Image 1 (tube, rainbow, N blue to C red):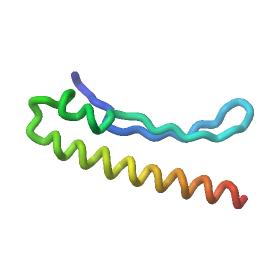
Image 2: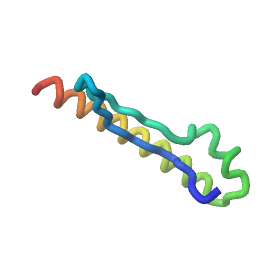
Image 3: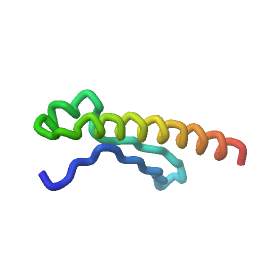
Image 4: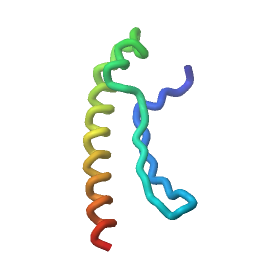
Amino acid sequence: MKEAKLIGFKVLLDRKGRLTTEVSGLPIDKVDEVFENFPDKHLYKVLIRESTHKIEELIKHLEKELSSV
């Protein structure tokens, strides 16, 4: 394994002009299984948890801004 996507975020525009958001990544409950022999796996959990929280805030902010335009 050369890379592992811990968290991802996309803003997508479809052919009809609709905007959607997509959050993807490793579920926090799978970190211990995937990174079984990694001493810093607790840091990966914190990173996923905090990033997910901030992305959710960003999505709410974007929805609010777009609905007011």
